[in-house]
Image (tube, rainbow, N blue to C red; front, side, top):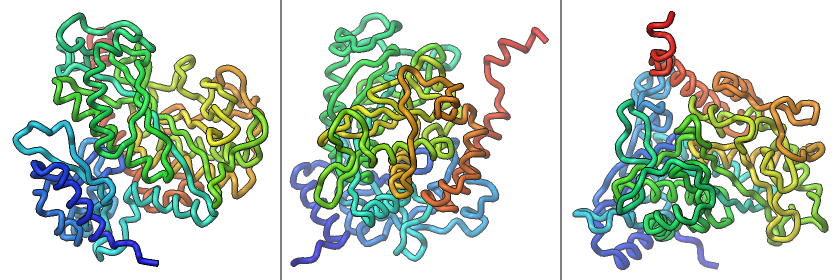
Length: 469
């Protein structure tokens, strides 16, 4: 049986296919996703792909842990304290793809997602989000399980210009018309108005290898949801989410708009979530969550139990920013406690199907501002531990699971950023799933961001207090 090609050969083959299909491409963006889900990397000439495949392109490993303001973690011991050493950029050849929104530019470009290695150029950095997820996927494989996942992402299309106070503005339709301002859930008029842009996003995502599927209008003005097809492998599913987000942003900006994945860009409108659908296949390809009736079987119940038990500890992965916690409000379809239900969108864990290939768990906690690699690591890790430990899940909730539902076996989630950071930092589960070094650095990053924001006085505070107290 012939051996599979090495990474250099895989990238060379992918590069040849890219050049044949798109001979005008001159540049390639080499993209690493940092802790916060921000795309960082290098822009290389297309002819430098051979150098990239051989580990010749480098970046400081500390880049992965830059805070949301782009600053090194002070005192964390990974940057200038140790000389800020480089790691090698290792591309995932299967993600080499055109950036369709650059077609027609002076320099049409491609992109490739990459991981960072340690300084020896052999082992992936233990703090790389993509590598963390790969380790959890490998643990599933050791148990004879293949995860199947799909990601749904909500986002707001916004005006390229902010208002006079620096706030985002909903968009005006292409070709003119009044600025959107009403709720628009499933509104076909709005959907049709923006359909050419959304169709271009879908095409760009598919050309990049991300299997974009359904598109709907969500509640808020300019808010949309795009879904991805179910994919074998959580690393591939996370890659698809990253590629879709890049396509959304790239196409929107090409058309003079902007886009935000903030969890709550408007205080009086609905937040944006990122929902994960997960099932597990055994070695024969059978869905282990599939049961004989409309109730979860034992494997699904144990996975639900593991997800419930770990949800409080991993809330920081699902809600990593100060703004994230504005999304969690009663009646908002954003969960407030660790509860599950049968086809119930009022719970954190929804079971939309329990039979056949469609038997799956929908995890509804994450905001659109979360890092897909970290979210999927927490979700898959929780499900695996639940199955391994045969964790009970309790009874399902009917209706909206509210914050005081502890009596219903639905413990409340951390409702502040501080509480979520503390729960993360002190969690044995997080240490097992993410590794102690990533656990430490992610908490340190969030605490540094908290201190930065505490030093910035908001306009709301000036409005309330400047002349009244």
